[in-house]
Image 1 (cartoon, rainbow over the protein chains, first blue to last red):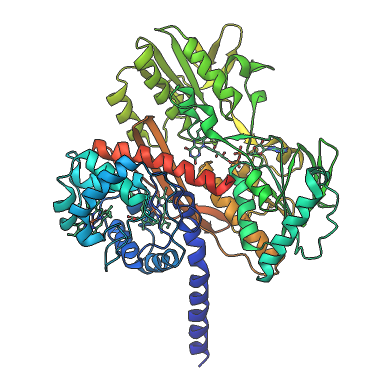
Image 2: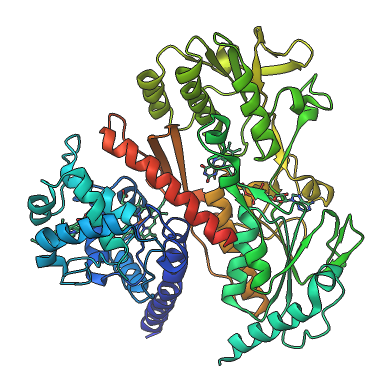
Length: 189
Length: 428
Ligand SMILES: Cc1cc2nc3c(=O)[nH]c(=O)nc-3n(C[C@H](O)[C@H](O)[C@H](O)COP(=O)(O)OP(=O)(O)OC[C@H]3O[C@@H](n4cnc5c(N)ncnc54)[C@H](O)[C@@H]3O)c2cc1C
């Protein structure tokens, strides 16, 4: 009996510690992703208000080196998949703050055309659509969207392309089109 | 309106009505009925400013005062780019105005004494500030006394540029005035010092400048130690970008600095004399002078702390944040200063509310630029363990060597994104 109580108390304590800890763990992300995950840019992605599913699977793939990352996989390697899932939930619940970028109409118009032709089917007309595993792109920092898209176009880069579907669509775009579509999507709200 | 918001609003408008003069007077606040405690923060750099931010977010009813000697702050991160003439110093300028606008009391003054028994702080301007909890984040003091020949004014001849601002511009000017075929020396002091990869980054970015403008020039690193952080990455980048240009003289090979000669503009090491056209003489370092004066340092020259709360083990109610803290193997970086700022904030708020401070995690990251489009990084995680702040096993990693050009270029771009976000966390 005594034993059981002790074990029960331990579980509760651990549960509480973990719940309290997620805010603490999540705060370690702020210096790169912004307070509460709302990045001030220009290359660091906002993760506040992003699709929880996307946040979780991206981080788990990064941690297990199934997806290319320059630093995230290394930062995450000592966290459990469960802690990662809790952080995904934590940030998904924060308000989405659209990137503060002034729209350049020339780029916006070119980008809109590229988006209609190449991205809309999966990401929606302005990158607003969030399906099961796809991220919100509308209002994400253009600098980040360019970097991510270049994974699919850069000839020196061939490790762990995360999505075949993306590779097919984005892989053939000219650099100017990537920049334009990133600008168009990033300046949507 | 919630109670918390109301408190905050009331206090801010009250301060607004008082005006700046009253703000700086340091007189006890008349309308402090709602305040749950007074936190005074000394030093408004990365550590102090981030601490202030998180105290305010956690409990707006706590009265926060920042005392900072300088009305403007230039970030050291990216200042090596200014030295190399590829960025302007103004792009690195921040201040505490956003804190003041949120209701933090900001006093631009020099703290000259701390009385741990009376829990009060005295400034050069003759003000007194009482506190319940003090967060001390004064950064480093450059220990010129430790090097023979480093007499008064040495930094005007051999700029350290280890605190960004005038010094950064002076070093840049000297490098720009140097003749092609000249020699530039940077000294690496005994560990621990602020920003372990910083000297090697400076060497690389200086080489970047020379390669474009004065290709016959040389860079010599005089190192107290025999290894450097991110060593294989630095060596790989130098070979690739600046072959034959950078000489790294390790401690065992005569790099240990013993003396400087200001008149002859040279560094004298255990083995040889090293004359040069431009010298960035980075001296050994210890905790900011006010920490030493208050008796917060031990023989190491740094401030021993409790690993969970960062409270000084020498004086109660004083929490040490940033470079000034003695933290075993944890690197002295802006990223860690921020992690400590958040930790001290959470601890102070918990203690003022009568709760138990949570156990923190300290995450470090440090980006380095070997060229404007060539970046790499180190990351590591540290936790309280056995009374110290210990590395989490397997958590310290660096970017891979032999990486594709895409990775180096995008890490340089992420480095800038990091700077913008950590500076916003601290100052905006
Ligand atoms: C060349 C260089 C490059 C760097 N690059 C990076 C990098 O890329 N990434 C990274 O993470 N870190 C980097 N760093 C390290 C980083 O700058 C420091 O670790 C960081 O600034 C430490 O923060 P701090 O709050 O402890 O001290 P500081 O930022 O120095 O702040 C201390 C503040 O306290 C004030 N102060 C001191 N004494 C008093 C007093 N008595 N009264 C009132 N005010 C006082 C000072 O004026 C100052 O504003 C670099 C450093 C250098 C030199």
